Image 1 (tube, rainbow, N blue to C red):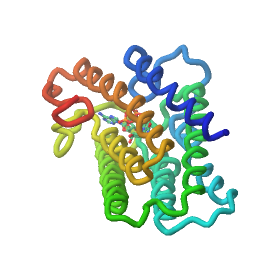
Image 2 (cartoon, rainbow, N blue to C red; image 1 turned 90 degrees about the vertical axis):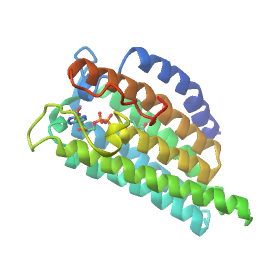
Image 3 (cartoon, protein in one colour; image 1 turned 90 degrees about the horizontal axis):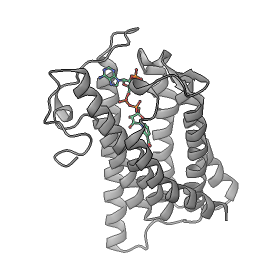
Amino acid sequence: MLQTIALLVIFISAPVVATLLFFISAPYGRHFRDGWGPSLTARAGWMVMEAPALLVIGLTVLASGQKVGPLTLLLLALWEVHYLYRTCLFPVLMRGGASRRFPLLLVAFAFIFNSLNGYANGTFLAATPSLTDGGFISGLRVCIGIALFAAGFATHVWADRDLRHLRAPGEVGYKIPRGGLWEYVSNPNYFGEITQWCGWALATWSLPGLAFAVFTMANLVPRAWANRRWYEATFNDYPRERKSVIPFVF
Ligand code: NDP
C-alpha cells in the first residue's frame, strides 16, 4: 500500500516538477537566490537530503526478512555504491560551493523524495528474489541495464571530478569546462545520472525503477537547460553548439 502511494506521488509529481523547473530554476548552486527561507551549507544539505536514499532501501530489504538472489543483491550493492558516493564523498570533496547556501525547503523536498524512492525500490527488490526468468532475453536485459548503470555512474563521477578541478581549493567562481563530453553537452554529469537510472529501470524492469528514471529526467533536463542558458549569459565565448544534456539531441 505504502509502495503504491510512493509510486503515485513520484509519477504524478514528475510532470509538475519538470514544468515548474522550466520556469523557476531550483535555487541552489549557481541559481541560488535569497527569498527561499532558511538555508544550510551545500555540504550539509547534500549529506542530509541524500541520506535516506542510502539507508531506506537497505533497511527495507533487511526488514522484509526475504532471501534475495545474487542479481538482486548486486543491484542493491550498485545502488548503495552510488549513494555512498553522493551522500558521503561528493559533499566532502566539493570545492568552493560547499560553503554556498542551500535552502532547507529543497533539502526537505529531496529528503521526502529519497525516502519514498528508497522505500519503493527496496520493497520491489525484497519481493523479487530473481531479476530474470532464466531466459536469454531477460538475462540480456539485466546485463544491458547493469552496463548502462555502470557507464552512467562512471560518467557523472568523472564529470563531477572535472568540475571540482576547475577550482583551486577555496575558490568559488565558475569557468567553462572543456574537453571530452563537455564539448557535446553543458552537463555531462546529468547525462551520466540519467543514463544510470535508465539502466536501473531496465535491469529491474519495474515500476519503481521506471518512476525513478522518469523523475530524474523531470528534475535534471530542465536544470540542464537552465545551466546552459546561464553559461551563455555569463560567458561571451561559451560554445553555442553544445547541447544541454543529451549529446546531439537536447
Ligand atoms: P552542478 O554541475 O551544478 O555542480 C556540481 C559541482 O560543481 C558544484 O560544486 C558546483 O559548484 C561545481 N560547478 C558547477 N559548474 C561549475 C563551473 N562551471 N566551474 C566551477 N565549478 C562548477 O551539479 P548539481 O549541483 O546540480 O548536482 C551535483 C550532482 O548531483 C550531479 O552529478 C547530478 O547528476 C546529481 N544530481 C542528481 C539528481 C537526481 O535527480 N538524481 C538531482 C540533482 C543532482 P556550485 O555549487 O558553487 O555551483
